[in-house]
Image (cartoon, rainbow, N blue to C red; front, side, top):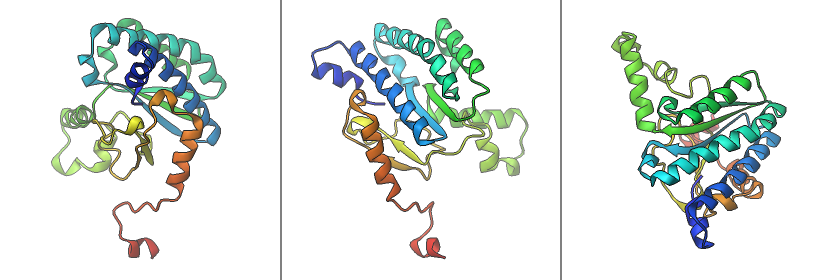
Amino acid sequence: MDGNGRWATMRGLPRSEGHRAGTESARAIVTRCRELGIGHLTLYTFSKENWGRPADEVKFLFDLLVRFLTRELDTLLTQSIRFTVLGEIDDLPLATRKVLGHVIAKTAHCTAMTLNLALNYSGREEILRACRRLAAKGTPPDGITEEALAAELYTAGQPDPDLIIRTSGEMRLSGYLLWQSAYSEFAFPDTLWPDFSPAHLDAVLGDYQNRTRRFGLTGDQLQT
């Protein structure tokens, strides 16, 4: 969800207003995905590198997250959306950890959709963490398979993403779901995240539906 800061700067507003507007876009996109029957949605919210931002901006982001989740819990329950987190929760502020734990527990029974927030997340760290967990279990070399490693990722039990969207025209992954995105399709709309509406999402999904996914196969193999 890229472009909050630029959105605010273009309007002569503080960056905090861009982040605030971004939460409204998130709410609208989650609702639209639920309407469309999308089973899993992950929002890249805060990377490990984001700790390098000014301290007051980081504090505002987590305060905003607490308010947002507190406000939206009833909606998640009503729409039967299970909430989870991808990333190192233990390193987050105490108030944030408490709210995250509360929302995760309250929505654990929901089955219509899974909403992941990638918080304090790094794709490289996720892969290293999975390797360390396998090593700690004493997994022999021939037991280190793709399936075994995937079972140690934050996304264990969830499907790999079909489509990854990065808004604001940036064309890089920034460490996002590096293992899981091996065969994902990508979209890089120029729209800044606060302006990214359900209509924009529908347009991206329409383009995605016209693509042929190869999963490493040739055209001839796909036809047989």
